[in-house]
Length: 311
Length: 288
Image 1 (cartoon, rainbow over the protein chains, first blue to last red):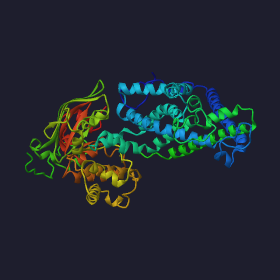
Image 2: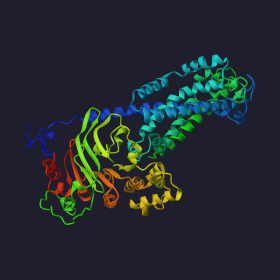
Image 3: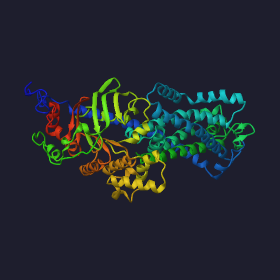
């Protein structure tokens, strides 16, 4: 206590403790070394992740590009062992299955998320719903497939695209709900207070002001949730199955989606295991189409989201 | 009730000068009107407030006089904002915020269950610290409350929007930008836009929660001028950290400390001749 201050409660003034200059600071060399080590590890880890992704993209493009021609998008696969054909039926099937899944899950997930963020908040029910959503997100997608097989495929006695859509919707629902909640939570409470202070009911504040403020984020979230399930295979194994034929109307003779429905991921899975070069080539082509679509949409959406801070 | 209030412009309470703000405060003279003869538009009676288990307001009683500007001052965390946020029950956005006691407005306790919150908030508007334009055009921002509470024709709506913008001293700056998003305006303009949005529905009372603390001095002086002109038609309650501002714009001042209302009186008196030692310490900057 070399310099006791005159009044201990005084603001500012000389410190009551010994001058820091009398102490020896920690070794700079050591701190710099640790800093370098941490930085290097981060770089290595990040580079490794990016390298793996680039390798996958590179390999898929290298092998798949040969399969991509006009016929790839307009034709169904050839008879096994033959040349030609394409994955047009699977592309259409994936588009339809995914779209129907989105139509089921996005509105439900959206309103669920709105409820969590705006109305349920920290209530007991909301906490429960949030927990269930998180658990659902952690369920392996194959389990979802088997579940839908048990409740939809078996009772109806046939595989169907609709069952595939339901399985994908199951996976999308909690993702959309949690994304919606997270994005609405980003909207500052000042905006809610200002709108409520106008004498406007809560639901109108939510719909007219809060959701509008968060709209670009919500759209991005919805697209990303959809894109995410578009690449799922496991849930379709027991539901949509696959088919060498074109989709025969949404409500075909065998009910929704007219039975087993061609789709890209299952086709990749099937064809890649076949001992025929053309089939393997088609599988690579299908992989390329999915990767380009998913990656492309992701990038486009992130670009939009980055400049979409509207509140 | 109100009767005729003769407002003396000369100042008779200049004798005790404690703080620099009194130079400005001295120009006003609400100290001479008969406080008890003025009509109270809001009366807080024995108001307590809790954030969860933590009590933030203790037995607050305050009379807000009609067509007067009442300033609420005090150090950070003393409950100023908390107090006025009970008047329109906006605190209810948060689950664990609870108020007890009475806030009388129009002869009824607004804290009582069964209060029509939409009607209450139509009649008691609020301006917040951070300008918060809604994610829509300038025009739609101002029209928001009007559309909510009234069914108006297109031309009447735009007349009222223009009028509210004029009264908020913003019309000349935004008349060619009505279709642009509200957030495209500058910070000070955004705050005046919020004021326009608030007064468009002609509330009886305007609560201002540090309306000028997030904007620059020029915009601040515009908003202060605005308050002076709004006073004729509205009752204003303003929470402010800025004592000069309180002295400049208000007729009455309440000094809050640790959730208690330490002193309440005419602004000139609070700043020139405070009755409580805590008030004097605060306004002279000797506060610890």
